[in-house]
Image 1 (tube, rainbow, N blue to C red):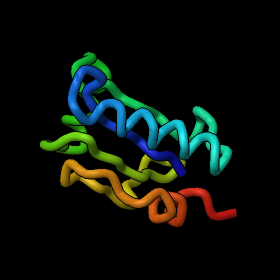
Image 2: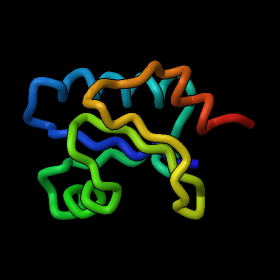
Image 3: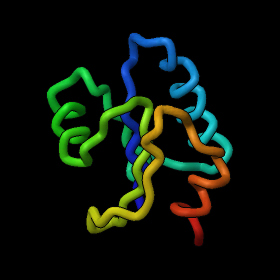
Length: 91
């Protein structure tokens, strides 16, 4: 499973998103293979956001290893970290 995080680095929610990502990596030992952060102002980030039809930021999407959609949080707020982990990093 992968968590895709979409946000704008130069926005009011940037610090909160960056702390969330940092805490997710540190507390749940998540590496770059399972957590991808996209700047929606970049070409790649914009293309990925368009692929998932995202309209608000920040947004998180969980996809399977094959890219299949699993769960999303796209209302412009961050979910609880335990909720994200429950969808992704069950061993």
